[in-house]
Image (cartoon, rainbow, N blue to C red; front, side, top):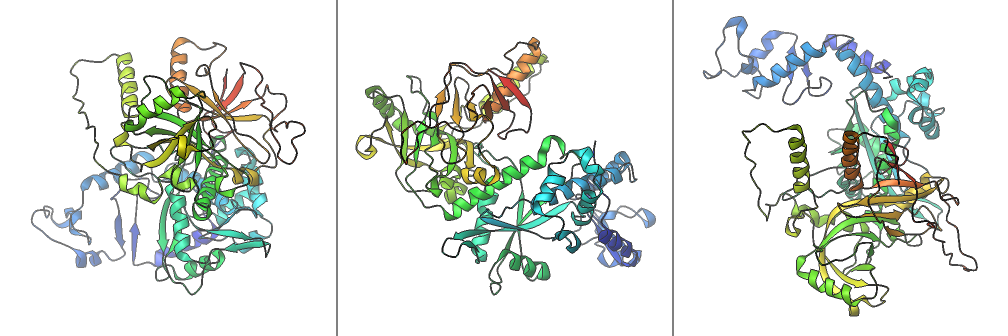
Length: 601
């Protein structure tokens, strides 16, 4: 079912005062669901528009009641397609309760639930604070705690939520009336001597923090090739100034703990909710996990100490190796700057590939290890840092191919094959090193457990091709009460090989990389017909190339690691993998218990 929300008491009162206005601006690209540049000015006295008329012979074709609309307005000529689009949308959707009225009631409900998500997102142990532009009304603050909002609104099923009159009233009276949530976020650091959190007071650092967060919640159009950065949610950002947002600007600064004497720009996050379908499949819970993780990553970008990072690769180097490889960061619970489960797909500059192949042949170990030459933060490794903007929108070194239209009619299978070919052509599997829109990283490559990579390693350069996983482990510790119910792994692949990476949760835990014998199948029991198998196989392979969470319920020890005996103060975890083959459960996105559940073998 699709729930609905009525206008708040406050907003309904404001709308009734429109009868006293001399002019009204209408923007159909918002609640009208129409594209730019549609818009209109309404005047109580139609003669006012004469003062804004811009007459010109080349647009002035009408007379009297059929005057050209382009004559009126401060921006001169306007395309007629925008007006036609609004007219058509009104005709199709309908300006009545069962048309636009229904859409807006349902979208208002979604925006209200998203408001509930934002105001209940932060926890007492989080290194950040979130302040909404519209605070919770005073009559709701005492009874509606963050825990109650998450329980009664975000975790409730649609029917139960619809029957909960108090929850529906909270959504209606507190949620945004214009479908737009505005909020600001500031980071804070723990003062162990005082035993409390100390908020950042610098507005410049607050904007920097939000820019780090926004970098992981936005896309830039990139040439020569789009690097898959593992972006899972798109948000918008802006800044507010005292001149334009006087009272709310001051109130939000105070709540964020920013310096009251500093009058700089305030970083603000904006998201517009214009869909009635966001309640499906626990979407808001999943979005909350994604956003919280990226806030922790942004906090790490601000506070982590730069280090020489160490990575381990599960890949093998063969004679036809093109320099591409997967690698995982060596994490550490004891070092906050390394408290990440970070996996990426990288590529070496071809200049160094032969040297690395030679070193692999001479080594007795197949384990590839990489160490960065310069000290850097994990955020810089996974995003390209401040230098990544230099590589966006550059010309393609390998050149673009022009596709000419085919005159002959293609069969369905030919069209499917053509689409697959294009996906492969423009995917990162065939991307050239020079076309990867990321900065080069100087590294040392060595094999096995050599302690002196400076002496024994191969000096090389590499780039990030794809972010597979970038999870801050402190977020898991804060959000979850304990270990997962079963062993949790992360499954990812390319076209030929698949790998498992154990997901660390909290101390003590372990990292484990496994090179699988084959890419797991999503239909082990063979219950699907051939066409269904083909379709599901293609979709599942696409999911694996981005990575999916996998549970192994057949491991009897559960999700908590089993420790070896007599380890002293440094616990050692036992390997939970005892068999060659397991049945597993995977999810269609990088989160558990959201999306489509798939049985694999």
